[in-house]
Image (cartoon, rainbow, N blue to C red; front, top):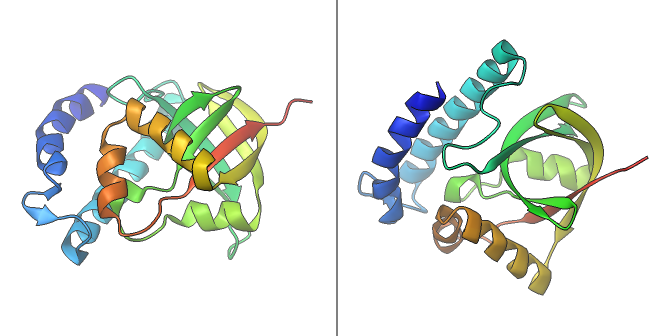
Length: 175
């Protein structure tokens, strides 16, 4: 499955880097519909592969970037939600962002974290309790640049989302 994604991504990314997908500009309803479907499908597939492999597969994105799993309490459902995200290490913590692939809509996990900033993080099969800290202003800009250095598509997401993309530091709680 990792091989399949590593084969597909290079064909999709050239279209994305031009500011849209297959000529559909970012920030439009068509773009949000396309990426919304793609993200839901990819996330669902990632969850299935994770469950079937016991968490041994897809720990890294095809470019080698770290995939982490955050577990947050749903603000409406009061059920625990587990979400895979791309993350960058930063001084003993992890940087994550609610980019939603440049869509205008903020991902649901962001609202969950804002409502209850504690949960857990799983990295390479090791689960740890954590605190989610939303960063703003100059610190947010610096951390976002770290994400862009890791995954250049974040620069495009920021330009075209039509909103400020939220950035969080995920701080493990060490007992």
